[in-house]
Amino acid sequence: MARVLSGIQPSGDLHLGNYFGAVRNWVNDQTTKDAFFCVVDLHALTNTPDPEELRRQSIQLTSLLLAAGIDPLQSTLFLQSHVPSHQQLAWILECTATYGELRRMTQFKDKGGDQETVRVGLFTYPVLMASDILLYQADEVPVGDDQRQHLELTRELAQRFNNRYGQIFKVPNATIPAVGARVMDLQHPERKMSKSVASPLGTIGLLDAPSEIEKKVKKAVTDTDDMVRFDPQLKPGIANLLSLLAAATDGDPKVLADSYQRYGDLKRDTSEALVAILTPLQERYEEFQRDPAQVLAILKLGAEKARSVAEVTYASAADAVGLIAP
Ligand code: TYM
Image (cartoon, rainbow, N blue to C red; front, side, top):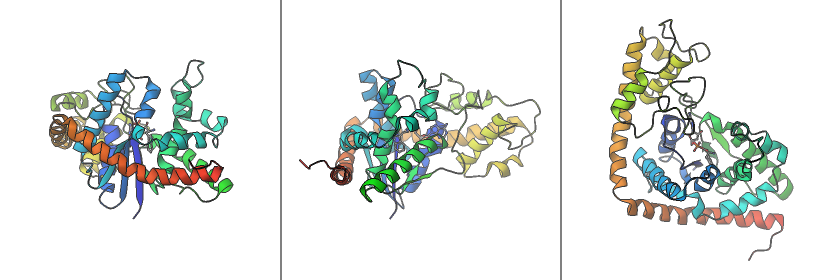
């Protein structure tokens, strides 16, 4: 059975990009694959969050993943900081990665990587991510398009390590969905929908009320020629709405474009399809919110299962580089 592993940061509210780019595909994967999903609280420290806020967000994100359909009986769902091997292997991989390749990471550059005050954790972030993946000998890593470069680095580090020390790590593949891999901001369709960008009208959160979703879709930036065509270059706003409708209805954005003459109809159907997906998710979320003890118990069990796999890989890697077992 193929093994999948993916991760998500507990920072900011989850949005449709996270859902269509990643989480929904995790839910599908768990039925046929050996699935590990990780709430990457150590990665969230790169945003220097308020401590109480980080604790709250970690529980909230876990509840949302459960509400979205991650089933703890099928998947191993855990907090990254509960499995110390992630940090232990990260150090060994930091001694494998080069300064040049980390400096070239576009997410690092986008977050102000050239500034003196930038935290070192932001620089080494992709190495910790490689550690998350390689510890589980994952075959596949389901992610959105923005993680492509980090996955290439992970593959490169695995290969470099294996060439030097022997076959310790499986070299994983990114699995990026055909539709929804890059959900764009509704107000600025040339940039991706993101938790960190201050664009409340451009981002649809998974917990947004139906009236908010309707308002945001209605106000989504389009263009003036009133022709529905799937053309991400020339008509990024319309292409984004078609992609959202396609993702929500398991359709094809190019085929869907032929069924619409007017922007208003496309917007109405898009917001209806999104509300239909998010309403049941929000109801399940409320149930988990009422029972944080259950969420913590799920994380505890997940960490035990994750540790049993991660510790084996870490021990092989540590032995391979010449560290003496304790
Ligand atoms: P994060 O927390 O930023 O995002 C989680 C997942 O959501 C996807 N995503 C999107 N997909 C489509 N359109 C968008 N606008 C959009 N925005 C976000 C991301 O591609 C991601 O799949 N570094 C990772 C977390 C991580 C990880 C890992 C992932 C840490 N360790 C190991 C995979 C494997 C991140 O910051 O994702």
